[in-house]
Length: 414
Image (cartoon, rainbow, N blue to C red; front, side, top):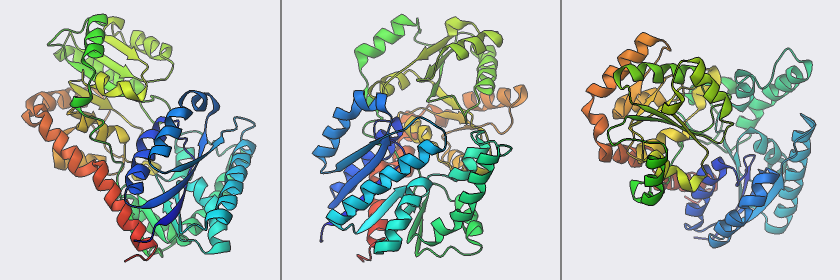
C-alpha cells in the first residue's frame, strides 16, 4: 500500500489527559499500519513545559510529526480566533510541503480550519465530531445566550454547522444516538459518503490490573487506613461543568447506611477544598473521603482500590453525542460502574452488557434501589467478565481497525 500522509488537527492538547488517552494511542496504532501523521494540537503552556518531552518521545518513536501551538488564555473569544488563525497558518504551510492525502479533524473548531484547505485543494476531510460542541457550550453554561456576544457566536456557528457536516467526506460519531440528530442538522439524510460510529476506546493493556504498582498501592492503603473489607467507591476525573458532585455525595451518603466503613475515593486534579466543604455540608466524615490528585501513570494503581466507580453526568441535549472515557477505563480495570442514563449510548451499553447499575433519578429512594441492585448482582463481582466486555466494546485495537477502515474508504483505497 502506498503510504498516505494525514494531517490531524486537535483542539485538545497532547499534554492534556484527553490527548494522551484519546488521540495519541489511535495515531500510534494507525502509524503502525502505514499512515504518516502530521499532528497539530493546542497545548497549555504550563502542561507543555512539564510533559512535552514525553509527548515528543512518543511521537518520534511512532513516526508522528508533532506541531504544538501554545494556547492563548485571554482575551475571551479573541484568544480562540487567534489560536485558530495560527493553527490554520501551520496547516497551510505543512500542506504546501507534504500535499496531504486527507485531513482528520477532532471536533468542530479544527473542522472550521480544515474547510478552507479542502475548498482550496480538494483534500478529503473527516469530521470526527466528539460531541455537539456548539450546544455543549450552552448546555454547560459556558456561553450565556443573554450575552449578545455569545448569542452572536452561537447563531453564526449554528449556521455553519450544516456546512461542516455536508462538506466532509466522512462524519464520525461517538454514539448511535447522535446519528439522527446529525441527519436533522443536515435537513434530511446526511450527504457524507460515510457515517461511522466509533465509541471512546481505551488502551486495555494500559488500564489493566497487571499495570498496578503494588508498593504504591500498599502505601495508599496504609496512609488512608483502608481496611481489607472496606467498600471503596471511586470517582475518576474532573468534577466541573458536566458532572454532578452534589448528587454523587448524596449517593455516597446513602451507601454509608449499607456500608458504614465505606470510603469515597475521588481521583481528580481539581481543587480539593470545595469537595471537602461539600462533604462537611452533607454530614459525611472527612475521614471517609479520600481526595487524590494523580497523573496518568498513577491512575491504574489508584483505581485498583475500587469496589465500584460512580459518575453522574448532567443530562442535556448535547450529551446525546457523548461517550464517557471513564466507562471504558473502569471496565478495563475490572470495576463495575454506577451511573445515570441520558448520556449517549451509555445506558444501553451498561444494561445490555450487565456491567453496572443505572440511576435515572437523583433522589434517596433511587439511590437505595441502585445500591440494593448492585449488591444483589453477582455478575458485577466477576472482574474478568467486566474486562472482557471492555475489550469487546471499547478496545483500542478495535478502534484503530475501525479508523483504518474509515481512512481507506475516505481516500478510496478500496
